[in-house]
View: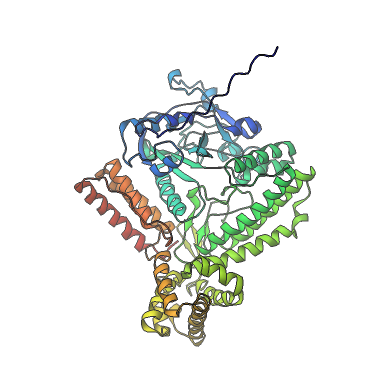
Length: 620
């Protein structure tokens, strides 16, 4: 007689979370599915508590999305929450140097589980196949599941791993904190942490895919641990290492892990076979990377894409904010000097993205057929045409968005009026790509050739002028609106050719307005009014740039002694909110919980950093 099966218990109902309980943080304990699924793709480290840290930043909104704090938790810090954050993320790895030199570490500070540093391809390593490279100063804290989503959490600045460039080049292990080694000491700094926290949250609020900063913990001498989170923190380079090595088994493990995570997070459709999933992987990358690269080019985002797929997530999300910039103008000749190599430019990012897509096509073929074919054989693959078409479509779509057209207007024009859009796009590019007569020159961290015209100013001011004056701008008015601080006297001179282009620009712009009005049965003045309202938000005057975010962060770190943690959080919150440039999104700015004195001090700091943004609005 078979024993009776135990009755299944109904799952416990998740009641309202107590705002004073922070037990969910304990689930972030080093354990991660990638460790079990792709064990050869990680290096595991024991970790210990790192004393002396203070909380410098905490993202309450992200913590609520992840289920770490209650949805109605106030945006105020308390000792219990602060201690939980420090105990969870204030850690340092016990690395190879510590083991070899028998570094004394109190046993009661060692965490029970091992944490992973992941292996991935990096072009700055001597080995170009990913055998020695990966997380050089980061570990993955673990994962957490909440409301149908699994979140990854990782931290930068937790100690020197064996995967850093310094270890690969010098062929020895380094002590964490060694001041004589470049990018091998294992530490991160507070400036990078706060910069990434601000910029990533601004990008997220504006619909740009990115990892996000959950917390920044500060230590002495300006060091920090910077905690990041995302629903899938894998990079293309995590898979590329297996492809370069010809390791089919390892590649399948890593690809299957990524696919399963996407499906479980409801970000991908489920397929009936792995072969279909592998084919979908290549198509997904082709379309997704076309979309994000078009956004980068349209918004003047420099993210330094390259063939190794290291500086970007699998969904095209932005990571590694140390090399990320948002330009005020289309400074398309700028290159970053990384000592031993020059970066890509903004327009070159498309070519790099296209090659990443070609690599995924090769990878998909390898996964399906079990045989690796040289990448050159895929140079004419149909998915590359898909990439090209998607890129051009989304580049046009973003331009129409910057004009101020809403979703319905854009979709109709893209479907029915492609020639109209292309004609405007050509004359727009004439001004957008114009460069100073000064020529190429060096800047602090590279070299550039200055752009001279601010297209955002024109798109913001033109509809208001046409609505109020009911006539085109004169060439002098047009040049006065569009000329940036980089434009010298020669750049602003109105030649016959330039005057004709000014007239053409306004005619092409009005053709778009006229067609939209006709299609949607509205007057041209009504359309101009709508464009003016939307464009004033999208093309806001004081928009953050790479230079300004560095000055803003520096100013915040110098001013914070005047403010409490909550007061500084208010500065962060209000600044990020001010940089939200989406006319269709919720514009509520939240509740102010500070007393009048603290509020006044916070406003003074905010005023100072907004002045820095305005001063650098056209820069790199």
